[in-house]
Image (cartoon, rainbow, N blue to C red):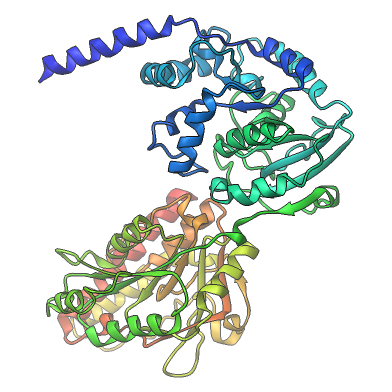
Length: 576
């Protein structure tokens, strides 16, 4: 087997070496820019991401692979029209790049030479797609100013229409386009813009043909620039041009996040806040954002023993959301009474209900993660993790979620929790102090004392309150709250959350999950929102209470609480 592997590697290296010498017809950056200025041509660009996507299975961070998109990319790269196609000049040489750039392209081309060879028309003249990358990876950065000046000639005294992601904000905060005559903007989804391609193209057709269309939309821009060129527009896919200029202005030595702009290659670059800029707002002529998207909601219900409550929970979802697109994932956490099998049989003929049976009790976080994984596999955009002893009350439950998401782009959302005792104040459970080292110390102290009391059958200790904020007296549950700890009986995760995490962090078996979630969201500045307009009924700890039938199980409960607070304490110390 080792010999076969070595032979394969040798053959691959020989193939790459031969293909690396192929004389593709690609103009360098300077000649490419001069050609665009002289001929006022359109440009459809192919970077390494588009080439990898053309294989048919590669997702870029902000664009999932789509069969229709792959077909169009393959067609356009060999097209023979007035629209110039741009591919990386690094196919011929990357000696002009710094060590970072050379390392990247050497690694990429080590397995991609064959892909380029198969997709590219060997007789066709191409431009350099890296003409938009004029700074961060260049060895000789004195060339950057020359390239910037050439780029500015492209739109000198021209009226521009930007077609960009909703968080791209081309030219905001810099003077890159200051020599243009006017600027207008069509804002598109920051993620998976291709899903709205037909709508984007229709809006672009309303643009006057004497205006220059500059596009920054990932692989969607490649196709859009080509299609607009066929309709008589000059359209240029400018990719990272504006971000490269920002890095140039800041003398950056590596990709860094740019304030208020989506910067996908930089750490924390996808944390983008709203801006209050009158000039920018006045330039927007159309918004094609995620409100237009048809979202799919998934419910994850962790089942343990109590089948009547689980069935009532499922039926409440089915009753309230008759007209919505949703999936229900029931995860049986190895119920000892075999009720998981009953549920599997009961819902076997429902296309949108899936029952997963865990081989052992994984606890809250890991158990729910099994369901979250399945929901994402079923293309759910939002995932509501709800206790099996909850009941859905509103037929506009999903509409209210979408309304909040369109306003805040929350990562995690919590509803008002209505309870049997009528207090209705269990959510939210606390503020940022819930994550503090002092709180966790106090929590461990309380649970150790309670454990000792039960273990040795001692008289009750004086009650020590570790509730972090008096929710009832403060009336927090009446008002919308931001960045606050949410009750674990119903946690709604959004696409924003799934950019960073695939579910719960599995530090504890049970308890403390809400605190860990708050800590992780705070680390990445992800909004956790409590919205009392959304409501859910909670019977309060059905599966948990089933474990409190004897002293032994009460001891297990306190041991878990001690472990949970310890893990959170250690995490808090690490993050401090």
